[in-house]
Image 1 (cartoon, rainbow, N blue to C red):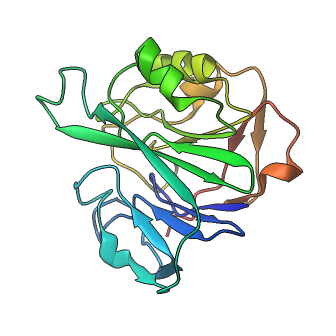
Image 2 (image 1 turned 45 degrees about the vertical axis):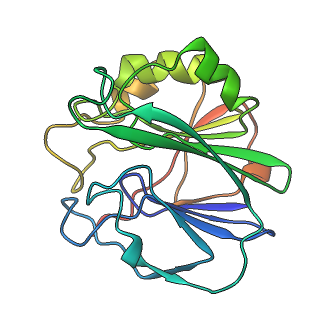
Length: 204
């Protein structure tokens, strides 16, 4: 499996079973970021906001996608979706690995929801706050999930991201082992786990 961070909450997961584009953002929707045109077998969006639901970003290959996908229905806020609506967590299974993309999760998961996730090899978690869970809740949730590899997303960095969301550092300060990668790609089998892996954002 190869995971490529395209900025914000958008990732391309390429596996032997197929490729999946997660939460692509529309042109001009995220300051400092421009999403390249991507070819994928499948596009998944956690919700319909422009910075997560721009399905047109992908050129579909037309091939069947053999990646197994399941979902967990959650909310974009702590008030049962009253503020920002629903949020879908996507669980991908391929090559014997389970990848969980939390989308714009806005609350701590319940014990039942944590159990539904099962074993997690690769966790993609929002950490910037304001629109999603912040660093404290994200750290608590990451510990509860116990993924082999945790990748923070949806935060503000040098030259990219919304002004109202926070940087990644407060989340990283709560992690035991942090690895900063030189690029925006990750291959799980190459990392010593457990680890929190910070990918380099392709800000433009």
